[in-house]
Length: 84
Image 1 (tube, rainbow, N blue to C red):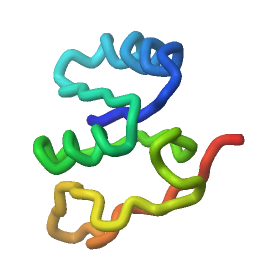
Image 2 (cartoon, one colour):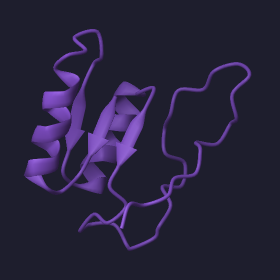
Image 3 (cartoon, rainbow, N blue to C red):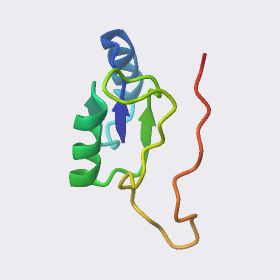
């Protein structure tokens, strides 16, 4: 799982929550560019993404974001709705 957020408090909270799931491989990034590099290298099953990152234009979709593809799954990542 790749978690992307520019707020340290949120990163710590997600890390604390996921600490109870040792089988989950966790990656984190605070910038969209770094997250794209990590996603390309590690191909995570899940990307939990803050849609308001300082280095990504607001509302911009991650075109071609590398995600693992599975048979029977959509070829595009599922759309997300930002928490406001």
